[in-house]
Image 1 (cartoon, rainbow, N blue to C red):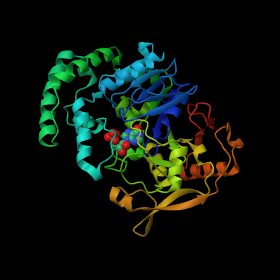
Image 2: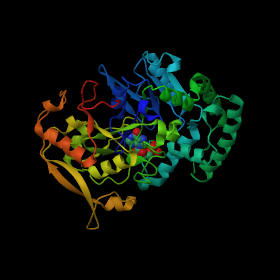
Image 3: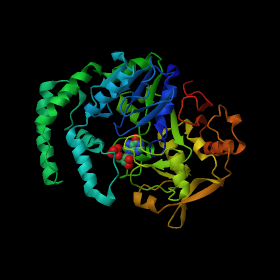
Image 4: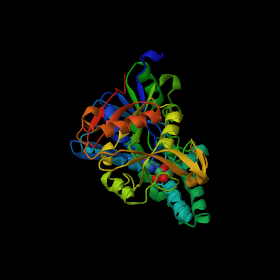
Length: 434
Ligand code: IMP
C-alpha cells in the first residue's frame, strides 16, 4: 500500500509560531488537500502573498490556492462564530468561493460561549500562576469532549437536538461559573439563535472527512496535514501543565483526521532559527536582555492571535531533539534565519545542567525544567542580509555552518530555509513531496 502514498505532515517543533502558515502555503502549491487535525482558533497562521497578509486561525493554510481542498478534521475544536467570520473574510477576497473546497468533519467539537467564559475566568483567578492561554475556550472545550458532554458539528446541524443539549449544558455551566468561579451567568436565549444561524451557514460544508481523506490518500493524491501550535505545547509531551489541550505532534493526525497510520508517510518539522514562546511556563534559553529585545523587534515576535509580545531566546537543541524523536521528523524547515544577521556570537543550547548535573534530555517536570541552565556552544555570526538569498551557496559560510550544525544536532536534513515572510523568500533544498 505504501508505495503510492503521498502525504506530508507538517508540525511545529517548538512552542508554536514557527512559521507553519508560510511553509504550508508553499507546500500547498503541490498539494491536492490540506488538513487541520487538532487545536482550534488559538492558532494564528500568517501568510504573506503579493505583499498582502492573511492570518488564518481555523481554515487550513491551503485556502489561498484555487485548486486545493481544505479539510477541518474531527480533532479540531471549532468556534462556530469564528469559523463563519473567517470564511466570510476569505470569500470577500475571492478565496474559497467553490463550496466543495472546504470540508468540515461532523465530529468537530464546538467551542461554545461558556467555554470561553470558563477559560478566561480561570486564568483571572490563577493570577501569577496562569497558563497564559489565548482565552479562546480551547481547554474547556476539550475537557467536555473527554467528559462526553461536548456538542459537535453534527449536533449543530440538527437544530432541535442542538437547542435541547445546549440548554442542558448552559444550565450546568452556569452553576459552575457562578458557584465555583464567582462569574455572572450566561443567557441561553441570547446565544442559541446566533449559534443555530452559524450552524445553517456551516452545514453545507459538514461531511464525513475521514472517509474523504481515506479515498484521497488511496487514490495517490497529495495530502498535507497542517499541525497547529508546537510539540512543546503537546498535552502529553510538552511542558505540562503549560501546554495546550490537544496533541500537537505527528501522531495526532491519525485520531484528529481519522486516517490510519499505515496511510501516512513523511513528517516535516518546522523550527525557527531561534526560540520563542507566548504564555507562561519554563523556557530555558529565554533572553531577558537586549538580544531578546532585538530578536522580538527584528523578528516581529508578537502573537498572531492575541498580539502578545513573544518571549525570545537562543535555539534549543534539547527541544529540537525531543520534538524530532517524538514526531518521527524526517526533514526540517528552518524559518526566520534572516533575523539572526548581525548577531555574533550566535548561541545554541546543546544540553542542560540540572542541580549541577549535566543532562541530555528534557525533564518531564516543569519545575525541574524551570531550574535547568542551558549549556551553550557559540557559533560565529554573520553580518550580511540573507533575506534575498535564493540558494544556500549565496549565504555566508558562517550561515551555512550554522544550518549544518542544526542538521547534525537534529540528525535530519534541512529541506527548506525561510529567510523572510514572502513566498519567494525561501530556499528549497529538498522536495517535501517526493
Ligand atoms: P490555549 O491553547 O489557548 O489553551 O493556550 C495554552 C498555551 O498554548 C498558552 O501558553 C498559549 O499561549 C499557547 N498557544 C496556544 N496556541 C498557540 C499558538 O498557535 N502559537 C503559540 N502558542 C500557542
